[in-house]
Length: 228
Image (cartoon, one colour):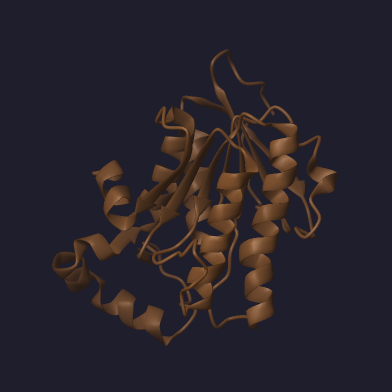
């Protein structure tokens, strides 16, 4: 893997085998301001690139072994997650909250000045009062990230994420949304975002920065404004 040129950023991506993380990875590999990308995941990507490094990590409940890998990073793009209803509630919370918090703990210890782009979700509730488990857990993760002490945390809250490329949809609701997407986008433009545009926005803001300290919440409308 080539060493970054002066001024280029070092990024780490978690969840690059997923839909949004995959687009984020493709974008970083072509991004002139990014000199090195390390992907951390449970399985190999099956691709090679001069900028790309891969680290296999099986248990995100304990990220201590990643401390050296995470040293010297400028930003993290965190897209690890699972769909509501696809796993039991305890597993949903573990993936959504515990894995995020543990990774952030180790990253902050190794690269305290790194920026953190987090794939949250529409309706995320940091008060913990939402009746929807997904909203409560995403909100809990958001709050923990802000409290971790990173100088910049970007909390992305997309609504419906359009897959762009054909895939096996996780449930009936997603199959219906994909089918009606053309009309849905026209009628409710601030309730949809393309997966590739979301991935690009998560990378761009982490690389470019905003100058605003602390946690910045980006709702679907804000994300669309970033990519238009």
